[in-house]
Image (cartoon, rainbow, N blue to C red; front, side, top):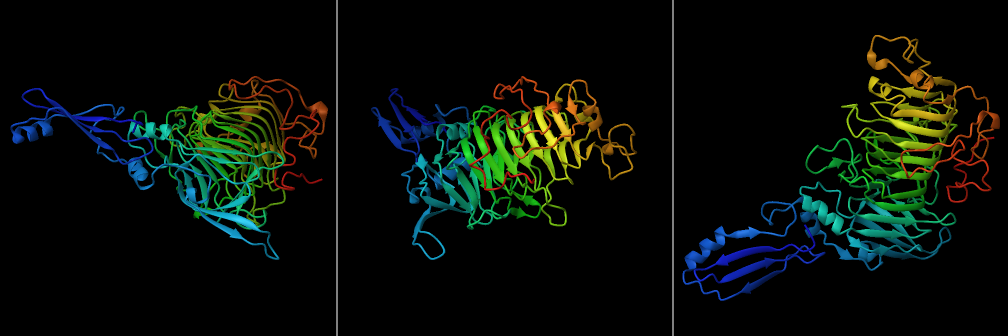
Length: 536
């Protein structure tokens, strides 16, 4: 509900004397304050008074909602149980348990703060000298519940729960733990190249996957799963609560030099959490210099929204490295994707796609159509995987990128996706060197659209994109990736400046994630040790 909401119950007696009962909740307090103002209440007939009171209640000043002010929603009930407070920066003000641990022969002295449940204290700044332990699903704010009224949305926007994580802070998740930034809340996690903010599992190393959940951002961004009218509540993957709305400029976070590693815990069979989940995240959100390392599911996934992520590093993701669906119209620029190059299916660490992209499997032409801008990405892929999969009607504008090392570079499924080629699906100035440019080489059927098999679902349309005169994909390159992620044969690289419709994407002329003319490389120094190193 709004910050100041007034309900007037007006009584008018035979002499037009008036009394009014004012219901006025104070900001950041769910318990209403009642004040009674009387002016010459001289009703002679108490029965008449009762009748007038019962029949003359008028509600005003309570936003766009109709009905009684006493109607409780999931949000108002949650706020009543967990009132909004002002943080004091202490562990306890966040609902945590603080513990000082003396040094031992194995471990150094440490301060720890165990966080559980829901953080409803706003304005806190964590202490970089304290290690924060996540137990279970820790949620920032209130917006993960199903919203029922416009006043719910207004209240969340008017009462953000803000949290700041300074450079060098370590956040460690126990098994099944995750950190969820809910709708209306805001996370500022800004590290530096020398001192990134690190989310990892609770153990002392950084060498495994699936040891905790991951980082989830939920916003009021637009998805094509929202109803045509009314409020949008889409249940997030992994049981993390609801996201979605009508604001693709929503601001959920400012992330800079953040590392998320060892995540992807399976909350149920075949239901793991992504390294970072962007659920309805708007363009007002800033994400720059983000690494997801050793995740048991996708590296990053975008469900709708319009956020643009820059300087992204995805290493050793065990499913797709970059995934989008539900009308994502944001983008990714300057990204390194390096799969586990030694993994195989027997070891169960084999990744899936470099990019897996969808619009809507139930209604492939659903609007808004997924159509992000992808620019300056370098994929170093396992020889048993697929580089780029487009399906279910997605569009994409892909510029100045390198797809290297996969079994096949391109896989395009569904007629609705083919229909986007040359208009909404364009790959411009791409080097694509894989064992096969496209097609299912394990099948006798040609899945490039030349020979139509008996089942239309098996038709594959990658060749349409590869032969497009609008797109430009070099499948004849003979070079390789150098150790710095640049292409080894200069003559095979066309420096061509692109211009993207998305103003958040910077025009560049070089191909791939790294400028060959740079004196230093943007991914060096802050990422997990040895995670970005290519084999000789």
